[in-house]
Image (cartoon, rainbow, N blue to C red; front, side, top):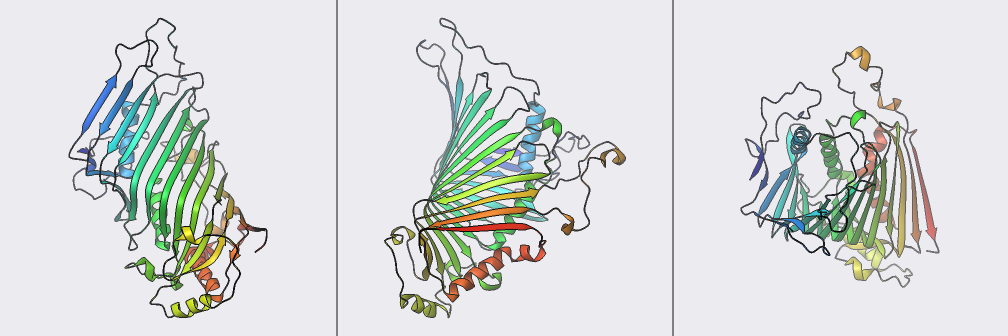
Length: 463
């Protein structure tokens, strides 16, 4: 077992220390158990005498076995940062490229391969505090997972690059809320490439690729608030320092195969948590869905930040509505849809959408895409310094008296649909109205009307 414990003698007065989360979450009493497993097997291999024509071998294999339990969270992350900054402080100097051996000279290791595997069921809990309430996102991996890291041992003229690959099978994410369903998939693969230049402070490139098969995602309004609190708790004590700022470009791409996204859209935002199928639902079903996003963090404390997101489906997409069987509207709506005359083209969407009882189609298409360009004004917490307030007030951001005094943000949304089949009815318009009211009603009520939101629809070919 690997556990983290707080030392009361740790210096909390230093500005540089990162221990601002004083007490660990109330999970296991004394200490915070990060890793618990009954078995551990570690194998390290390194070539001593090798053929000059082959590359030397250097790898580390860690097998955690079965019934592995991992706990993490903002408090554990603060402990990790404090540990790394104490034992491995940041070297702000430039790295020196490695001189490679010539013919006849002794070989050196080019990289070390680190592999961490678990078997059977693995549990990962991410603990965080919502005010005084303990919450968690529980992740269950039923068929094990593997993590492979390729860490270079040499430095080139361009710096060095690390590559990581994580594979998880039969994954389920469960939040601590009344509605327990969140996300599940048969297989999740993540590839993460990080490039580090020679000099500290130069531009770094991060590339993340997700490949997810047979995924199902559930959304309710409580999930939005839940993850807002999670993000707030995670980033609460992250102070931005110019001396440690590193410009970065994040290229994120997610590829979903057989993707289903379900939104609970009951009137007045009530939710039946006992059985998800007892709710009015909007489901988006796609054979293949791709999400691409570019996040450029190249300026220190920019006043205006931008983000571009593109969602595309190139192989059949269906939007469906679900009516609970116990609802009095169920026989009426199904009779209306079954006895209405409508024209259908050759789109074979039923083979992959897996229709069940209570579902009616709203939109079917071969291709669709959504592009969102979002621009916002960043808000920064006052910087904590040992200097007198009269000297720091000049660079700290001036606080406002009312949210309406904030500068307006803007969003440009473009939706393109190719050869759609659209089924419009009064019920369809009502459930769309419930969706807007449930997920955006509060924002519409409290937001400033001067904020700019531009939406453009593009329908290609004919209905």
